[in-house]
Image (tube, rainbow, N blue to C red; front, side):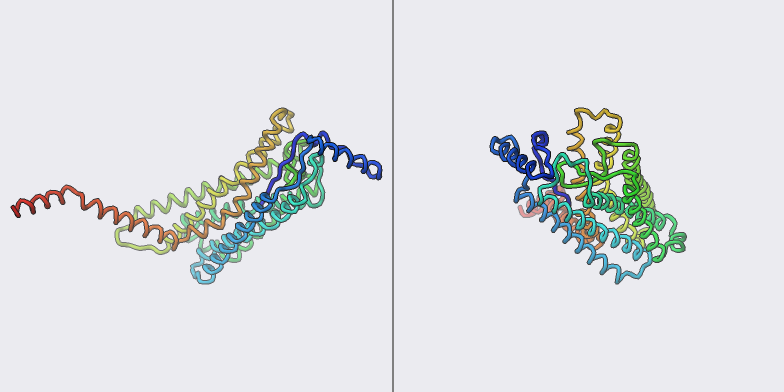
Length: 379
């Protein structure tokens, strides 16, 4: 979870440059104290309420992922159908990745937040922690998108071509696919180590990401295009596959003979509903950051960002805040969209509809006629 503190934008022009000699340090400290006394510089220490919000958000994400992992592990241990077991293996890997992706970058951002973040003049710089934090954000951002795409493609094959799916998809191949996904995301995240892109501190100095706003070069543009292109392509493929799966299940439902029951189809419906939930969550949480990153780096490289720089900084902050919610909301897809939960919701809704129907039946025209007849007969 990323928590972003705020700086006074005018402070960066007033702060003196620190030097290594003792005289420079004394002069700098005196200058800073004078500015603080005059009210021209705002302290960058984080507020207690902000730290509490960060800790509560991290706690919520950790608990959500642990609960979802427990549910998936329990379902995987009792599941005998191979297609369902494969889906649960994908889902458990996704939740585990979200859990680590929520814990590791969140801890680093919390550390930066508590220390007051980096100085605005150092936003374009990068150290080892920034490199690790930026790489973690790219890695744990691409992994869920790749996994959601792979899960949607696997279910699409299982729904449309069940025989081909049973012959191709196995647990071993599923584990190989997961390994390839993790390695591919790691390869993209490590590209700046080979001078193919770079990570820098981002406004307000409490998180690191790909350089998209200042002093961008061709390699930065290529890196952002690669990252955003892979993410948006994964979302598009998942959308197409889930649409095909859903349409196929609807047609099968319409063609089913009255009185027949297919337990396999009910499992397919449950899995497709969960995949749609994953896709909708990923689209809402990740699309803004992917699109804003592309827009920012293109305008920055072309030199046309100009006076809109502050607006693009705000958009990037909004995008990363939405992206971090993906790791909190993903587990609730499995917690709430399980077949047992959906069945209880359906039964409750059905009971409510039945009660309303009974209440309305008391006021039907036929009841009025019958009551009138009784009154006439009594007279």
